[in-house]
Image (cartoon, rainbow, N blue to C red; front, side, top):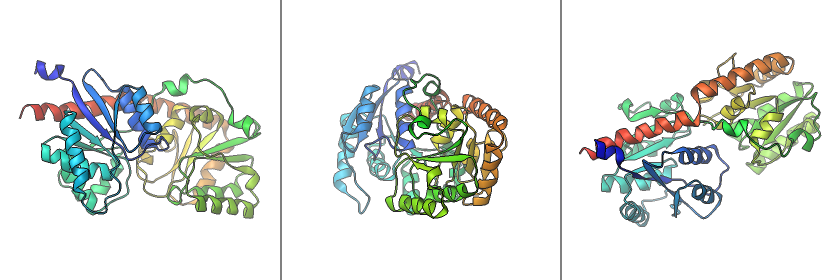
Length: 372
């Protein structure tokens, strides 16, 4: 046992993205940044030499490159590539999230009897592929308990572990104040500023939030993120038609989220379907901001309804209007909910708690594997 504790394991992490635009990429980044590198050596497989690869190298990970593409048919060449990588780099465990990489890495790992952890970040089903990937996985990490409904057919519940995303609180306590979103868009301090942060697409429900703005006085709304051009154009057309275009701002993608959250008053997260456990909800709570979120997937596990914000039915414009109106009118309640949200993050959703739980999964698997 002493030898096992001293052993350093090579962990192969896979991702299908080269950029840092999504919550999954940031979750992977913070996991590797805070990983105990005396016990685990991270090696990240990236599709190309882009932003994500550069960031991973800066935090002490080795980076290799392989673009697996989409699963249209079984590609023996990609499987052979993964087998060679696992052998040459002496990989002890594979940690994968996206379906394609999990599929090919899972086949290679199974052939070499190497354990694989499948990290599941969304609630959308992939039907037959879900069944295949669950068979290839040694352990399945779910970012929220609600995602277990995606695998309601799975009889071996012990194969799944719920580990919530974690926030690095230092990012929200120690950052340079280089800009102000209010100053940038000429928004007065007397105006209640609503923020909606994340990819702009139909399943995220931003159109329902824009529709609600017609009924919200003394408030402006800022969308932060990129997304589907037609959907964004449709929302802009809706705003023009309703006469609220001057109160709805599209700010595009940003990398100064902690500073922006300092400037907004309420985060509204109107997702309709397919969510997992959104980082931006935790980030808003870490910044001391109340959150109004729908009951989609893991949102109710993040927001404590009535204490740190409100949970409302997905797609219900009336509910958005009612709860947002209440918080717009009550600054005292906004501050109280913000404080409660910060406390909730400190107790449940820190990056330290997240990494400790994932490392325990690794060690439980690897210890059993070494004893065989």
